[in-house]
Length: 318
Image (cartoon, rainbow, N blue to C red; front, side, top):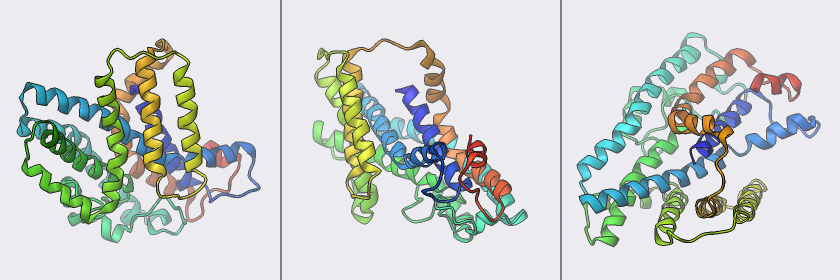
């Protein structure tokens, strides 16, 4: 799973850098460049699959803590510390980079002049103390915009509220312990988008539940191949249009694929160990800070016109 975290983080970063540097799709592009457009389109799906991995690990942690004797204070300190140790430096560094690009250098990318669809932030509204304060308490995309150019921070706010919702529901349903955290579920009614994302996140929690319920269940080593093809089909289908339901379908198929991996005991691949180590240690940091870094670099490289699709553009992204 750690190796998958690394792959997903790189997929998100690649998609955003491609959108910042390269002009929108042209049918006359080469096969190599078309492959770049194709891969860049999976950035959002990669975030959804991140939710599945997060749901799995948080459900595992919550279940273990509940068995030892649940304490909200210990849980919240642990979760906020794990998020904050990455989020706070990312906000500070990201804000500095955005100030350089927006105020000091006045690069066209920061003013929407390049038409980059991945740059959705209006910095006159997002590069403010109000937005910074809101992001520090995980209210981005709910009350304030993500800070500065760092639009991807929306998912961190979603994650934080899922960290509250899941244990509140778990304790209420399994132990009949209703806590004040249940009140935060009201956010779901005020923001259907975050509620819909919770369905994808819960696929990861369901994966942990299935693993725990059937600890001795074993599958053929070929089963993950079939499940992997099903997951790939779901991801490809999601690329063909905006159906409104592709996120939870992709999440469910990915969770099924992970379950088959966990229950078929595939051989460990030594070559993936460095990737797994990176995924465990740095994928979250990469996700949290990559966009401001890339926005400044892209703004410096492209000026007011993104690169035409071709070998030069592909080389610049790589």
